[in-house]
Length: 187
Image (cartoon, rainbow, N blue to C red; front, side, top):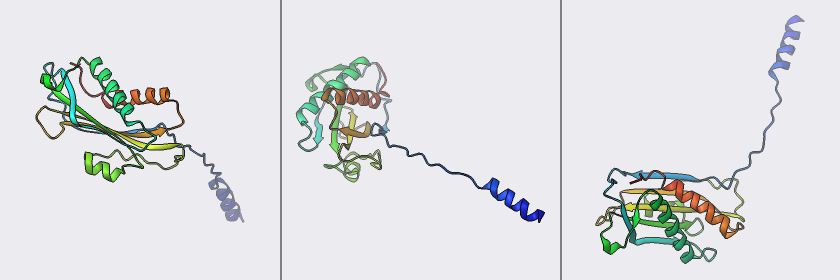
């Protein structure tokens, strides 16, 4: 009888209540992957220009491509200037070239991004309301002049909220560019 009571007592203590909290997936999360070597940058590499052919926006009519290109250029220029770089014309023999691309998932899959850019950040869309948010990818690449392959690349993925105001999206985008270019040394 004592064995049965002891077993019953142990079973009572081993039984536990389990609660599962519903964790909402944040559409504000981002992932980022970087590759390359920034070791070529020195005080002598302070002038940059736009890459002549890497300035792509792969998106549908919800995105104004011209506006996005202007905003990308403005955000990158501000970040680079804050680090001591100066934007020059490609005809002025820049020390480095900067190219960029943006894509929405509905227009370019992760597999296509990997094929084109050689990188994929792998942001999961699990738990995201696809009616309000869409995964977007942003690539920034640095090139030495006269080289076809980039020496450094960063790819970030996050979620575009089409219900946000343009100003809110712009602010969030500026913050993303700041994170993406954060590892570029100041000159």
